Length: 195
Image (cartoon, rainbow, N blue to C red; front, side, top):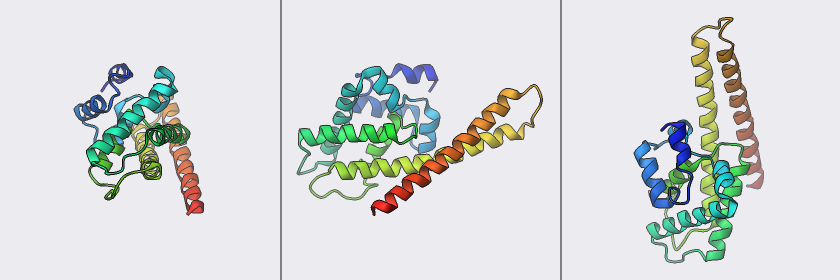
């Protein structure tokens, strides 16, 4: 998916659960690595373009679709669903990781497929936040690996005096890898303290 195509999907119509699911499927995004490379708009970009309330409404639609697909016997109340949606968005924005639209679909697809266990009765805010926190940690580690690989690819070509752009890019990837490594450790320490 090109950058131009990825940015063109930022609309209420193309970010509905069914449309996003189809776009992710058509783009072949099934893994965290593919999401990193996808060019799908970040949650921050969606909030900037559509506004926070509209982004939260889209997240509510994704949660409602998930509950329908899981056939829960005790669905979340509308107010609880709205608060959960806002908390998920805030978590994504505060994570320091580029969580994008494809990631939302990946998390909810994993839930539909039972990757987070069986659901007896219903799902709640804590369940959904647990999934996203787990995914954010996973994506953080994948970003570290991705940036290390990119840095090594740039190194393998050998450094030439006229190749300053590559050297700057390599340095940026190394800095990013270190940042994600530190962010991941901080998040893990916070989670360990909470437990």
